[in-house]
Image (cartoon, rainbow, N blue to C red; front, side):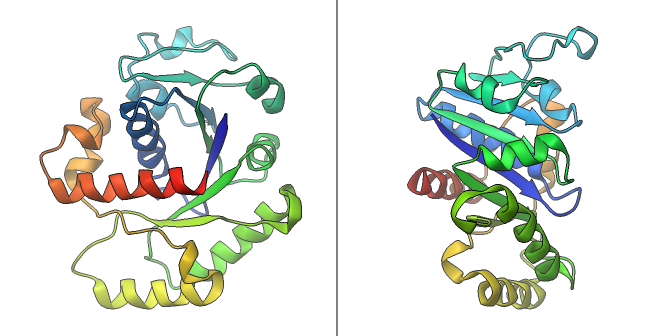
Length: 219
């Protein structure tokens, strides 16, 4: 089983959106996928339409969903939980703080993907700090494997280019994924319990397909 850990240095980066659509996209490619939620946000649990209510949620129980993606909210040691799973991919939705589950999530990830928005002048500095934290928990001094720019506004190419140049200088151009565009329809997917593959915009679907292909190549 291959494990993909998602992290970010600030809230609101769209990490949950990436987690759900990455999981659903892999499932559409006939992969057996489980989404392992390692933070306190219940948004994903509701998004996946597991058929259970938040009040009924049992930790360490695997929930199936109509999307083809399974879901678990672990409370015991993550490594023990993963050892019991029989999937092609486990998507680890990791919190950004230095909690036990953040440490365990990074340690158990074959691939660490950092979501970022290219909006802050301190973005590169914050991502380098995040990389230092990631390196503490991974073997061979490995840090972030892939930077994923999300919620990118097409009309802000000057600032986007500046941020991308800074990240390329710090991390290497080969570690920067193609941009995922900002779109209100993507933002509303949670309310509709849909994925990007339910949208009618080919450019958005193509962008997320490129993300899937990059993840599959790196794992």
